[in-house]
Image 1: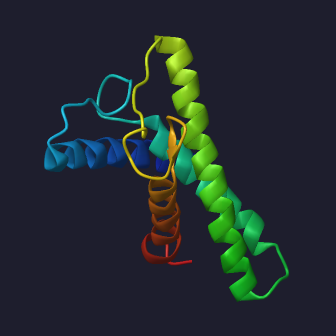
Image 2: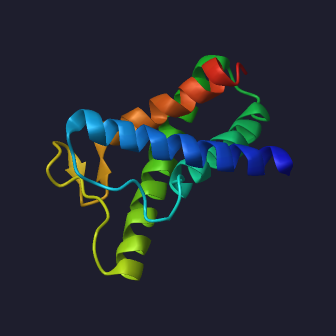
Length: 134
């Protein structure tokens, strides 16, 4: 349990700094997240989803190449749904959008873009196979 709590907190903080640095590089005047202090819980939630999903995928008895392909599709869809649901819920709570991908090519509504979803999928694999070394 502590393992998941620690990962959630750690990557919520890393996510905050990631967004802050990205906004500075892109010269976007935006605040990372909707919370106070240095954390953005969506990143922590994403990492928990990735960790729990990896446990589920490890139980599947299929060839590694098919498992990898299935994981790519799964992370693409699930992390996109996380981003959509987070954006939708926060808009309902605050009365305005905290982010929008409407200016990005290949966007699907306000909260999902294919490019961004591919980046989240890449980050999931980077986390699992480079950082965690599964």
